[in-house]
Image 1 (cartoon, one colour):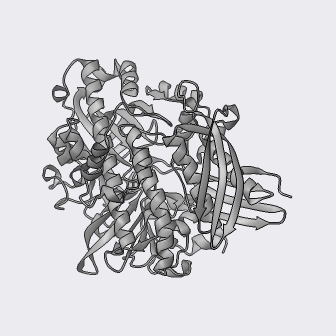
Image 2 (cartoon, one colour):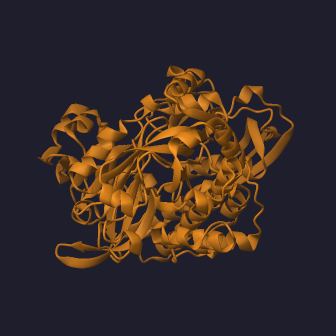
Image 3 (cartoon, one colour):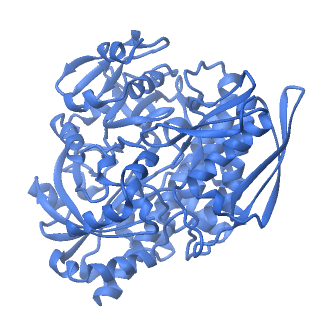
Length: 144
Length: 485
């Protein structure tokens, strides 16, 4: 069984990583974690606010792209820095995938928080969700 | 195919020009052209060649898929990629512009002698850092309304000037007069509006900066004079883009294009190259939204210019006119434009995509401001933090060789994560201070990410376009103060 986690891979300009888990849900959670860990030290964040997330997309890769893009959008517009990600379910219905989840974190506070690198967007470049023995893995490049 | 084998397929055409033949990769419609020196070619990653070859597979591509001397591995197009597509038979691709639509550079001249500014540089950088919000999560001092945001999307720098953030001459000295008239804010989604509103008037993060510089070398005194630049004086450079507005426009339209590619049966070597026929609804919707994003970026740089002038006025107790703070020029680095080019002896309308590349129109081109028409447009090449930047002029060979395009900077060679592991921000800050450069950053790790060593040598990159007569060196400036997000 895949133990949930993520690893950063070499890239000359942007950030490239692989996330994995025993289930699709876990893999998505780990991908979100990997992306936010580029922005800030996620371990140091309080979990004082949560946002529910519901998305529907055609194809798993599109769902992952939409999920991570939604989190970046909420970070900027709702002004929450996320440190915890829950994906409760990813269901396949006729031709599309539906995700239900929740992301938690704290309000942006520039006095207290120390941001690392800005993530501009999620790219489609080499984006892949793969079923493997014992679970799933996702490969991503985000523009920084 | 191994990396070595892939590189061996690339053929040197002449000094500084290499060709990727169409049999390099399946599906290539035209060859690739890489404009690099032998040394830069040697260091070039095979992935950059592959990305250049991928672009060559897109419908309607004209002449060559090109990579400028600062090219490096990106997403979709390589960074430093230039490609022109037939306006009717070709495509438009958000992956050929990038997320930071109209990321660009402007430079302001002054009549101030470097000595006067050096003696006050710490105070000046503190004040500039305060006046222009920067860094992740920073918000603007401005509160624009919904209709003002529409105006920025529609009229870019022109709107900013008409709203009191600058003077008429600023617009004349801006690529496209400060706005693309193709823009339509109705094509910009709600999410992009929501991200763009609070960030309007911010510098951003990453490689974006605000720099106070000293003119340290003049290569062409006649053209330097036409640009109003004198040795030993101070210039100010602003490098930033369309912030969350542009990022979201690209994010939204990549999804649209992903579906459009399937709808129109376009084979994609890479999903990030998702595109639509140039004259399709999807293609035109993206173009109008992208133009709105580009205009937002021009308005953003214009508002920041205004605050820079105010700051100089406050610190030096003289008004901006008296200090001679005129905008020399403003160029876009990430944009697609509908332009006329001569191809196989015929005038043709094409969508030129420049992703990490600068327009470099030569003398005589009617799209250049009247004041510069006899010498060619200024081409602004920022160096990495702590290294010189260059002003070039559009050269005679640019239209023939590169659809009127040149490099846009130094080009990264090391990832941000590796840079942070290898360098310590405090040490980099100290090294820059020892070189007489005052740096203000939101966080020391930013200095490590942007350490001079993570970029190619800007002089090596600039020499290639100079030797090919794509853009010729006019002026070199070196930083004395840098503000980073």
